[in-house]
Image (cartoon, rainbow, N blue to C red):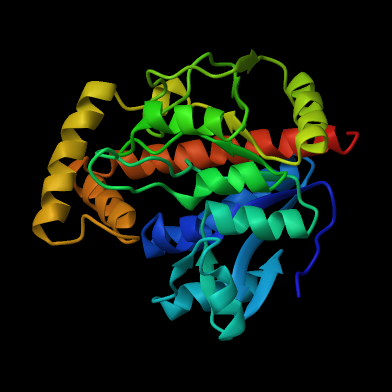
Length: 291
């Protein structure tokens, strides 16, 4: 059963809260994002799996319980059904959040950055389920582009192959998460949120696919690309030595290493960009609902 929320609504993922930030930051961040979405004129809808039930619009009590469990796994579209069948609890990634949000009629989703094509793709196939989800579910994903540890240019090419439009809000370039600009361009730039909302609403209806809305972090919070690349090389080396460089645990392990290496700067940037994406998502949802 999928619990429905009052429209206009903005979906928020639980993997960000469970695996993307330190445990002490999770509940304050959840409350802050909910506040930002409400102030933007929309309803926050935290998405997760609670004891085998798909929930779009988790209560604070449900979220606090899940955070208290500690070892709740994250799920994508491939293993979401298994968790439902086995009556397990799980944090939803971008792809699983999109699937459940679409099922509940929620058309806008705010996150940090999407997954994509991993570096070294020519040697080993490693592509996030997020990309296929964007091609399957009519949800607009507001994100600060693609996570910095991925191959942004190849991810951009795959999104084009899948027919997923990538549009920028006040930018001509796809951000690379902590970094405001990658080497990949967007399909179109929008400087007005109302116009962007009009395009998104029409495109979701027309295509039945998702739209990636690229929203760079504020310049004052961004990290320099060269510095980010140095930190990333060190983080990957550290995670590789620990034997955690492959599989679904690789990304959170690298993010944790980056947090330590940067003296907390990557976490501060992460929190800033997520808040900015929630604000834009709420504005889009409001305009798409006629506000």
